[in-house]
Image (tube, rainbow, N blue to C red; front, side):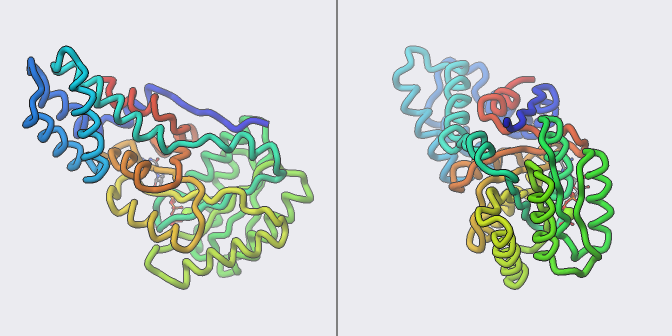
Length: 312
Ligand SMILES: Nc1nc2c(ncn2[C@@H]2O[C@H](COP(=O)(O)OP(=O)(O)OP(=O)(O)O)[C@@H](O)[C@H]2O)c(=O)[nH]1
Ligand SMILES: [Mg+2]
């Protein structure tokens, strides 16, 4: 059994246009034409990184490493510094990426993924996209609509389940979300499904009772399948920049997050936040959203991501 890989370089490239302008174009302009990169230029580069949502510590780290690498270079010109910075950006992402899912998927049937995040982050859309990709990879997928809070949540998820061509388990709005999770897992077990995706209501990370509810959903799931959930993906809206990282910190206080999905990277200039997310969170970025369509969820691959950022 294999997990999907979905990467469309052109789409990724165009999705990252605004982040490229803010980050890479400014770096290029700063170094361009310089025969020798001096300390003042490196300070300028650090400022560009900080103001591109990469975060203070990560930016300092990248520039420090760049400074060191430059010492070993015979030519400290603009091309050299661009090449080094690009590599250091890849390193930040790579040092914090893991590839464990393939192995785990084979061991569990059904493999259960719980999706959490604040209101409007893109959870439901991401579930639709995930379902589509897993289905296309030949897996039998069941979605559970444990967002019983919003009246329209069921219909929205139904549209996505239909698009992806997968089964949906739902209850009337107002029902206990844990009971939907219970029903979904029971059904998936009976029908030998491969993948279960559980949608949840948007919850503010500052609302204690809603965060507690997540623990209950998790507890109830483990009553049906003692290993469930296998993964808890936190969906973060890339547009919210630094705030996304605050959300991640709060969610991890309440529940163990095993992966991040960063959405809406198309149309935001704040894509640099992904570098900070990788370096500060002990959780890998698994997927990224680059549009509203069903094909617009991509596997997160550090090399390709940075390449797309540096390619016009
Ligand atoms: N451009 C773009 N829009 C996205 C992406 N992912 C989600 N959206 C849009 O974001 C909006 C909110 O998405 P939902 O999936 O409803 O978000 P949610 O987290 O389920 O929201 P609640 O259930 O209300 O908490 C929708 O208009 C989506 O089309 C993305 O990667 N790119
Ligand atoms: Mg939703």
